[in-house]
Amino acid sequence: MNLKKIEDIQKLRNFLAKNSFKIDVLVNNVGIAYVKSFENIEFFEIEEQIELNLKSIIYTTKIILELINENGIIVNMGSIASKIGFENWSIYSASKFALRGLTQSLRKELSSKNIRVSLILPGAVWTPIWERNNFKKSKDMLSPDDIAMVVKNIIELPKHVNIDEIIITHVKRAY
Image 1 (tube, rainbow, N blue to C red):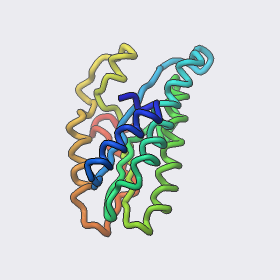
Image 2: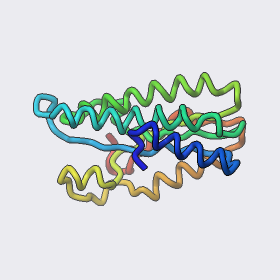
Image 3: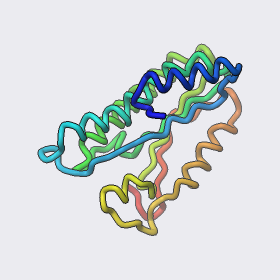
């Protein structure tokens, strides 16, 4: 499934609806980064980052929203780059800053339906983004399991409690 294609997301939605599935938790966790200076970044790299890091989350949430139960949860995976711009990460950061704004707006719009909306802002997490950009794994990076535990904790909170956003870093790698 290609999350950059509205048709693919609609196929998923149609499958879920046809089989009477309802959603308790939607976790939007996608991302791509081309780590290079703004001056050297290619137009297709700009487009791909905006398409995947922002537009695919907008499309998925909009198309799936009607299937989310009252008291459901939407968790968007941002980045510390949603709050702080980093050298050579300008387009990635721009897409994640926009995701932060989207999440804040959705939280307000969906509160009347008792749908909680949270944004997780992790620091460095060892994922394929780093390998793809020729970074080496460091012992002071978080693991995907660390982030999964936070998502689990958000899900298990009482239905009236929302984590608006949470920054997560390794104790030795504060941003």
